Length: 153
Image (cartoon, rainbow, N blue to C red; front, side):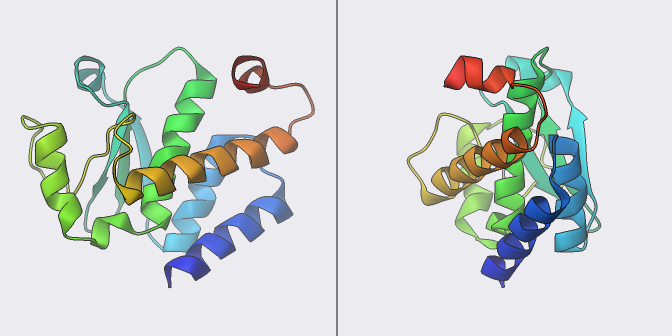
């Protein structure tokens, strides 16, 4: 099932020619059949994470640390979309992982939170590769050079 979700997502991105991450967020919501809501949360500025996903009954809530960089924002959202589309929230070990990464994060139906830079588990590697692939797709459909290329090559 997960592979078909991811395949549908990439096929849609290629067909629609996404040029920004918000188009990818809307498509992800359609593909998984549940709204995907992105919110900047000031409390994350003081936490050791750039973003995380709270999987609620009726939505996936992506919370990200405030940033002035649209490129960084897009990459963090892409990373979190990777978790959503790979359905990492369905894996029991992730529920414990959030308590290890952010022990004082409120426990309001958050099934997992994923810290950038902690790539010692397969979920993080998958999400990071997903974000890389999404950045490549978006960059390929822009009519002007991306700042991403100037920073990351």
